[in-house]
Length: 239
Image 1 (tube, one colour):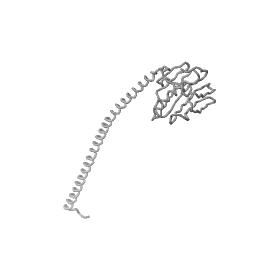
Image 2: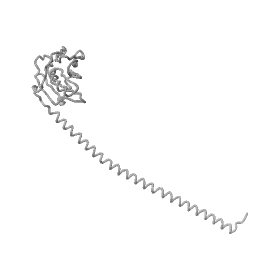
Image 3: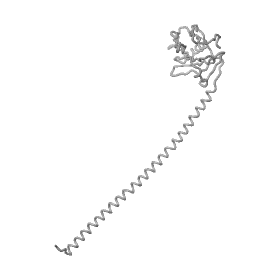
Image 4: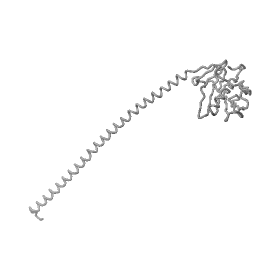
């Protein structure tokens, strides 16, 4: 066995010491790097969360205010509409102008003992349901209006009646008229009148035609047609 000299022993100790110092140096670098990387990441996450929370709170508050404002705005028109619906205007029948010129054709129907006049130059088609009159449609085949108006009479059940839907009411001896102002939908004018009776059936009579001026000129004729309606044992003049 070869004997280790003092010179060799010093070289071995020196080499081992150098290796140990390098290992300690690298270990310090790794530890410092890990610690330096962890702390900033944690701080950045905390800052990001806090900023998101502050931004969300600022966004939510105005939305809640808008919702409350909108709910108040929605409630006000509803209350106003309710008050308007309860104010029905009662019209004197004499104020309703009716033009009976050329109103000399008569539609008669036996199941309801119903009759109604319609103008000369007009025709009609009626519809039955369960062997009973359901409705009649009248329209002009000749005349001064282009396109011509048409009128539909519908037999309705009494449970659908709601007086709050109507603005005007005109009373007569055996029934009542309920109606609103004419409606203009892109130049097409319409008006319907609900006839509330004391019999088992009520009636709705509706006119539709194009052009406001034409409608105004035809409106007295429309009222005259409605006045001519007879039903049940009614043989008296309307209004």
